[in-house]
Image (tube, rainbow, N blue to C red; front, side, top):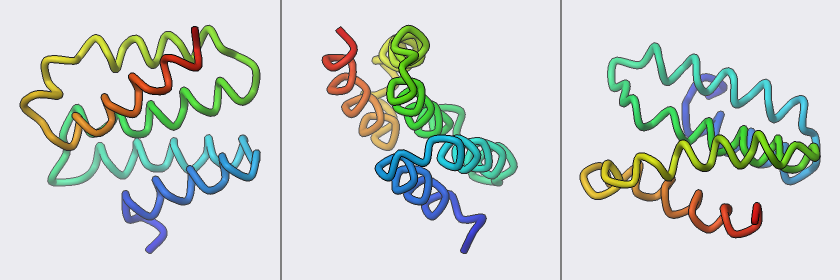
Length: 101
């Protein structure tokens, strides 16, 4: 299903792994739009798309923008204790932050 959030997320990550950065960015953009229109919208769920964007920026050589996105995700640390889905994104962001140092 091309408009399913999980399909979009994993499609974007697959494209990222193949270094098809423009296509991955487009899928991340679609993911953000689909998440925002969902009746189950969770403002912290959008950070999953932002995490993909951080990895895209990093792979394209823009470490500074990647770091800003990751710092924003990590700044919401308290929400990770309440929202387990966001907690997973937070864990991945904290691991990725080590690469950005």
